Image (cartoon, rainbow, N blue to C red):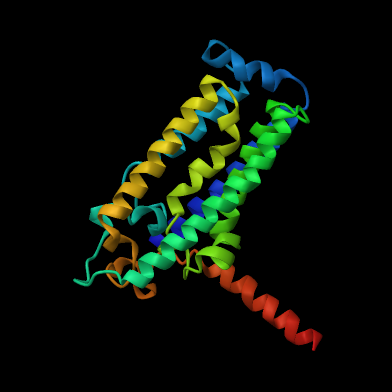
Length: 244
């Protein structure tokens, strides 16, 4: 039952974020989005609805949940099943090295977008839509394919991901350049989620590795979110074999 609920939850998240991204594109076609962005809560608008949805989803992440993936829930002591072993130093080094690579890459990519904004190649509407696009990509990474996992982190799956709860701060990155109540409040809550995750990781690293936390092992997985990734990988291998 948990497996089905978790998958349904993330598929629903994908649909919702696609809808939000589409709405932002249409909304940003004129200057209404830009005007509402600086009006703040003094003017109720579509942006207010999207902001409330984002803030609610981030607030939800602050508490233990049986619907969300163990990938983000492993920071909670209640979700940990200690094995009595400590994570190996090599595991810690590899996880931290991968995290630094992701941080450097993400910073470099978004610095280019900030530069374009500073040079007035586009305005705030582009940055808000970019944040919406990042939100869609986040769920795609969970369900279908994650370049960070494949190229930098080299973790087994989302359950063991070192940077799972970086997602909201990464989503909000383009908003850092915009001086608005909506953007600053979203970035602040995303930063709280990120900082708590990092504090827990450094204080209780045993919660983040399957060697020290039984709940992260494949045999204990109740969600099987990697099923879609496995199907895509298998299909790719069949196509490659067929070409030969």
